[in-house]
Length: 311
Length: 318
Image 1: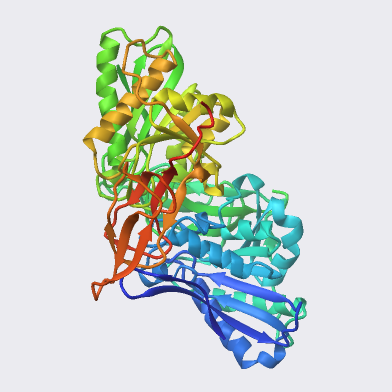
Image 2: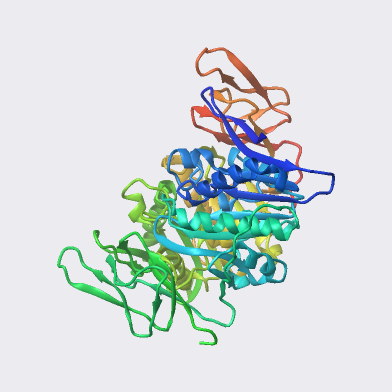
């Protein structure tokens, strides 16, 4: 059943409507509820296909479901509709205004309504697809602060990597942080690249979500074999940022294994043709992030490498 | 006056962006004043530019106190300003959501880091701040309610000689701003709001310049005289009455910033955008002064369109 989570009038005739698709079966009081949320950033589309596939499977096989699955495919619908990463008209990153407010702007009011609607759920999966600059393998990102609560669930999601990052980098104004602080176990998935749908990654995550539902006792349908992800704990994550400005031409494929000293790519000066930076791998490991957008400034992230175990 | 490059970033297709700092006096880092961090903060840059011009003459007249120095950084993001963009040119990130910065991070993290390293050790910090909503403010000064030295900061609000000084409880997103991080580094930090952002108001620019000079004199960084300005009413930000729209459409306002209003006075009407009739009338809930006024022609539902400071308010510090 399609429900409205937040409705607000726009100046000329139209309403901004945030919708969810509630799919439920045997939804007794106190039953489990899982929320799938995406479309926070209008240029991240991978979650759209995940939501579409999941809605189709769960609706077609509702008899195999026990409990409630709420699917929120577009919590920033104006952004998706206009290929705008932020919340149009406010120039705000929607994932920096949670928990929202009833007394601020329309954007904050919408954020408040979304949090209120999800509150009380058992699990929330917050799907992102990097941005237009970087391509990512399917991964769950968990802060050290929430590792004890979330790690167990992250392993169920059929991703290739679980990245446990330091508490110092936690952004308090995100949806995930807000929900985790309110008792909704919220896992952030990052995969693919902005403005594109990578079908294989989406199918992989749909299998993972069905597995999670199965593990929670909510799904009796088919569950495919789930891969065991690499975990960043006990491994180093190396960030390769550009120091020069120019165009980045990668020499290796995304998701490949690279060795210490291997050429990752070059930064070229487009006017002279000269190479202004040679990007070399500092370690052996998995190239799990690779720059997709070629123009770089000093500081632009080019790649991330997950080092070998205890490396 | 000494002109320094605080931080420089290269682009593949443009000249380097050099963040320029203007230093006056010598000795201990006493006060740093930062203007535009965003490309639309034109009034904020203009206030700093006028300060640079004024401080240059004051320095030539020997008005900077001995062993005190002042740094003014008018614009830390002219790449965006020159192309009419609010946030960073390429990835649309906000430098004022990147503090304290990271020297090995992304471009705007590096800019924030480079800037912050140069200014974190000042005793006082003043940021010429803007608001993300389109609107006009009554010029005022604000301090963040962090645990560091707040009593001194509250009392210092009145040194600007503006009618209102506000104390803000930080929201989660405030923790990555310049002002918040300045305070964490034990700098007494203030946000000075002039009236506008993209528009340079002549009077409000002068008001902000005078308020800054007044503060520098009160802190014995400048040695000269200026008229004392107003008595400052110091309030918690939540005491402000926020008036929002319940309907959307064309906004027709009947009051302006600085107007005194009484409870029940008509503040604005919302007009149906296609049929022209009035669909809502918004009246004041209190007696007070209009402190903020939204100034776009079209308005959405749930938009804060007026902030009113209650008339019957007691200042936290007499």
